[in-house]
Amino acid sequence: MQSIDKLPSSIFTTAAARPSDQFEAWRQSISVLFDVETRAEDRAADGFHASVRAWHLGDLLVSRVEFDGQLFSRDRRRIALDGLDHYLVQLYERGGLVGTLGERDHVLRAGEVQILDLTRPNLTRAGVSATVSIVVSRDAMHRVLPRSASGLHGMVLRDDGGVGALLADYMRSLAARVDGIERADGALVARATVELVAACIQSTAEATERARPPLEAAILDRLQRYIERHLGSPDLHADALSGQFKISRSRLYRLFEPLGGVANYIQEQRLWRAYGELAKPGEHHRRIYEIAFEFGFSSEAHFSRAFRSAFGLSPSDVRQRAVAAPVAAAAATTATEGYEDWLRRLGSAGDGT
Image (cartoon, rainbow, N blue to C red; front, top):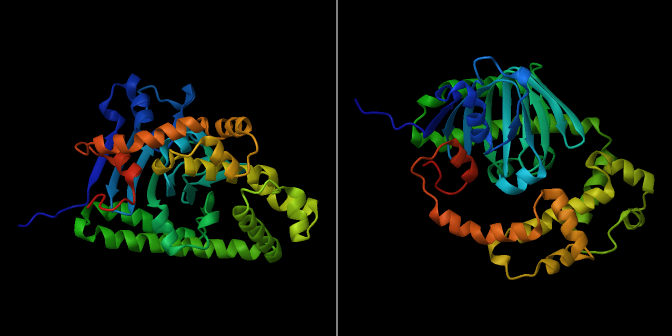
């Protein structure tokens, strides 16, 4: 009988470590996605229990994860260091979490699905839980969901019998059957999965959008696009935006309040654009102050302080990492790859096939 060429898979469990070392083993493994902490009352007397079973389908990863209670976080420094540019679609089969995503409170109960943008900060505390997760590269998601993808971070699909329940049922079924999928079928299953996720998200996003005042949503979108086009202008501030769009300052502030305020939003966009330029290996010939001035900073010292405050790294740190990255990539070995390596390279041509 011909053997089945199955999908690449990996297994991690803390059971292989001594009880006193189990949380540290988990911390090191999950650090590809999150920084984690645990309280004494969260830990069982016989150690810390966690496991990950993961499968690589090319444009996405599927995993079944179980863990004891802990705090998960992705702050700006973690985001800057790991450079992951994916979406995490996560069903909590058991357990749940509470926390914050930026300035917003966040609650997820058993049976519900959350969407996390891994380029955005989050801080959550989960109890003893079991999850099914799908990690999708940004490119793969945006190919099927270009218009709604910008507002996905923190979206929750409720277990209310609608699309949330449909997606939860599919994720359970996929996790139960993925070990029997042949490698040759992985790309087809991945594409179908992303399209189903997108369809469920689109339905939820459209329902949410109908509940918001359409005019407010439209003006905010226009403001954000204007800011994106004028990040280098020294005149990009609240008064200028109020005059340009013929709206009051109070209305402008109300529109940007969920985004941390208009001045904060402008600075964040400038910092992220500057970070992107500094992180390009081919741009290391440009002086840091030139990049700072290009994106509206009038002082290199102010730019450096704001940059370090936002990312926990100096501009020169990011520049050095960009220069070193090609060397590190050329020296990397794939002899003992697991889900941590796949996450870092998700979406790259040829991965897992």
